[in-house]
Length: 528
Image 1: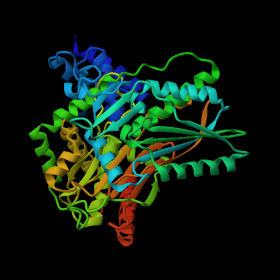
Image 2: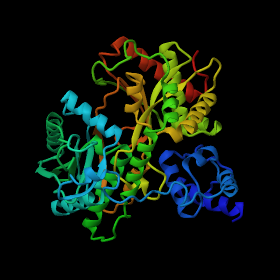
Image 3: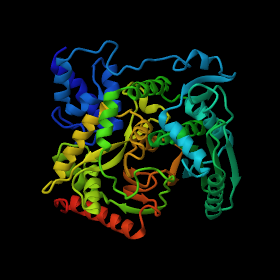
Image 4: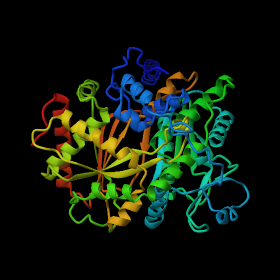
């Protein structure tokens, strides 16, 4: 097949996924707004079209022309690049463990390293709010309990993670059990007006966070509704062991779409979801965990002086309760996008540059700066973006901030790191910290831009008027950059554990981030 045909196919995919019909074959996918989740869809669609493309290929050849030329010059991988193994249920367990599976189980999987870590911390701290995620929606639509219960039941049937529980002791490895059928957890109460509804929602959330979710029993999802004359308030409570941020977006969109269709009498099904991508994720994680070269790569990344004194080991589980929000306006965001485009990098790379510049200023160090970075481990197979599950990992990134660096320089360095780290991203953090004898980093960077929420604009009878969310993690310092988050818009949220970062140091940290953002928006060099 000629290179031009490859390029034309890829340009069509790029244009559709970026919603940009004016894209040219020479435009950089990432500079034009692409990110890891959009890249996942691009690679999956390219594979469905018969092109042997991987996420790493797209990172190194980010235009349709360059990627098309690269694909034409390489030999296809047998079975298709990144094709999922399609392993059958129970296939990742030993025969001895399979023999112990009780009746009523549709599938059983080895728990991922992150799932085990989360559940261990929840048990060790006995903190019912830890990794207990809540999201509250004010819905403008008629409330019909029968239709909502039906939508919730269909959602649970659609996503096996929502019918899961965990067993950490019966089998040779910790196990996630997927039950064939689970009764949805839905409670409903009435309120006289909007103010009463908001207070009822607040009280229910407080009760949830005080009692927690038991990971020993399915479902790990609860749904609560407070009705009011103008609509209803919908709250979802779910354990973080079965869901990541993208999955939360997918779950909300699917639930509201299912409810919307029932309200208007539309029987059109949602796009089908396969369990294969999650099994493939677990298989890839198991392979990475056994790879000594990958382990050595991450030991090298973590080999630096900690940012916080006395943080060589975890003595207590951190509790980042002190927070500061820094909004980024539309004009500021466009200036930042322009800088990222000049650097031919994703916006995420520029945010990483801002993150490390702020840390350099805060610590007065320019070399050996290490931050954890939340990475997406979803395999690049068709339909992986539709699956609800926990596909995340957090791993150390070491970056220098040399004197005289520009924002473009630092963004390119961040992108270079991602290109190098991508093949190694599934090595379990728990394995690395066991080798190190303690924490691999003190601060974590996370970037989110969940395009799935855009699908809500296409609903007929349902509209979301407001959002709020709660989650609690176990890192000493967490820095979240988000774009168009439904609950908070675009900006940065910094959370620190006040017992590890005293108030004076926390205030200085916030100042360093505000200054780094200002300099990046204004196009001025990072401070020395």
